[in-house]
Length: 124
Image (cartoon, rainbow, N blue to C red; front, side):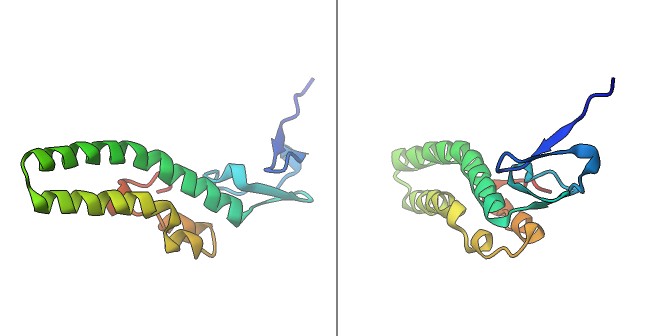
């Protein structure tokens, strides 16, 4: 007896995997949408997944930057404090970046990752 493998899309619809046209890139699998036997990526859902990944990555970066800020306060280093405040503001604003909002396709969305701020992209 052969087991059937099903693919489930973001709305809970399922299809036999052997009958489906599946995207080669699984980075946004949670955004897959089924139309007949073709699976495509819902861009709005992919953007939400992308923003959640930004939030996940920035958490430890914000914690580390708190330490930098406290050390700058102890040293009474106004320049270091200002730089730290700027970095923390940029991290807080990262999920709302216009490059994410304006991405017209999955490739543009992946390119919206700010490696200078967040480090290496999980979508590279």
